[in-house]
Image 1 (spheres, rainbow, N blue to C red):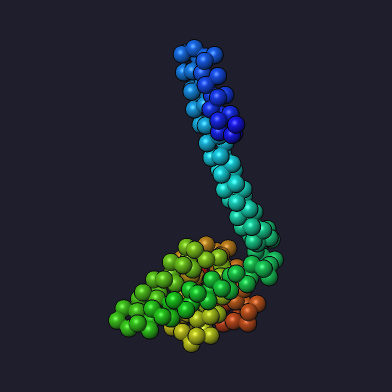
Image 2 (spheres, rainbow, N blue to C red):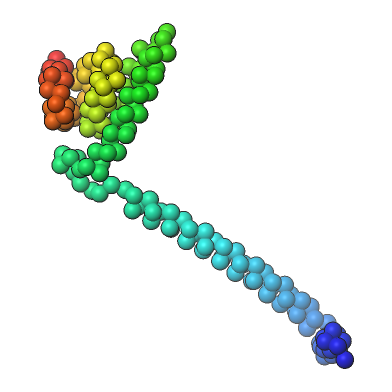
Length: 180
């Protein structure tokens, strides 16, 4: 006797013992077992993708800067500030070099990013980068806009940073712009 024949005989024997209601319930139980197995599989997949999400979030958490106040000049944050400042200054230079209304677009970009998005340190580094790129007119305009539009504490922070970076004239100019 083969295993297939044995299984067939077992199936017939089970069928003889069951009434119609038992057979119906058995089918429902089989369907419920299959559905439970499918749900277990979906749960395992969801948990594994959630675990991957937790790993990604943990990696992002490890990459965040240390909670050091800006006034202490955290070197880790300073390197990020420099990257943002260089990017903004380069975009402003590119806009200015486009011609037509490039000067106006560059000034709008600088006004919006330095007064609404960037920290005072980043704004100071943007000014330094503009000077390095020989974009003196944009740098002078940034000094006047920032000094005029920003709160006093931000103006003092940028002036201190500029002074520490060796741009005492720009530090004085931004303080004069803030005073009026």
